[in-house]
Image 1: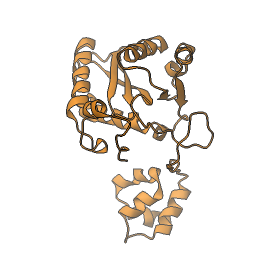
Image 2: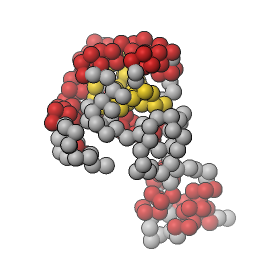
Image 3: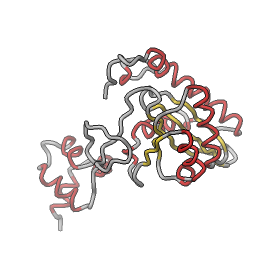
Image 4: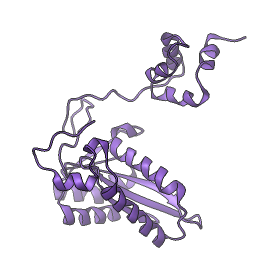
Amino acid sequence: METEHHRVVGHIPHGLLALLEQGAPIVIGLVRGRVNHKKIQRLWREEGLRRPPASKKRKRRPGSSDGVLLRAEYPNHVWALDFQFDETSDQRRLKLLNIVDEHTREALAMDVNRSTGADAVVSVLERLVAQRGAPEYLRMDNGPELIAWALRDWCRLSGLGTVYIEPGSPWENPWIESFNGRVRDELLNITEFGSLTEARIVIEDWRNEYNTWRPHSSLRGLTPAEYAANWTPRTPELLP
């Protein structure tokens, strides 16, 4: 016997069911006029789904407990770190350490190795700091390489703050997640690397192209490199 639950689901295209995980209002907008919005909301609750916390306009310093996301307001304010994985044609693992300046959107590093520990992360950060100065904060998840004492001690001795996102909450690190998605779609998913050396060369070329040839709407049509080169304290606030 068909239940109300099945009737509601039947009005939602199969490819949109996954969007329920992002919250009922998204699906309500997509099926408006076909299903009562209260039924969608009830289905969402019955499935035990939850939405990411709503973003707020207030800003905080790391360590506060109000759950408001720290927003990068100038270059070298916040760098975001994350790992990505791929493999060479012989099915050996590649591990990418991606580092992004959250304000300028520059891809500061895409360091490629077979494995990367905390000491290697520190080495990459030391190189970047020598090239462009130190950030005020590092934003990252709770991966073992990123919570290791080698990295924590280096941050403390260097005067850098750390912002660790909550486990299972990638929306708290949106800039690096967006960047990783672009790397996956535009590079990793369509390229076969024959060796570690080839991967390093191709990925570094892509990083340079991303920084110097890809305009961003949030940067008012400038590339990350152009925006960083022209930034001053009087530069208007970035677009959302």
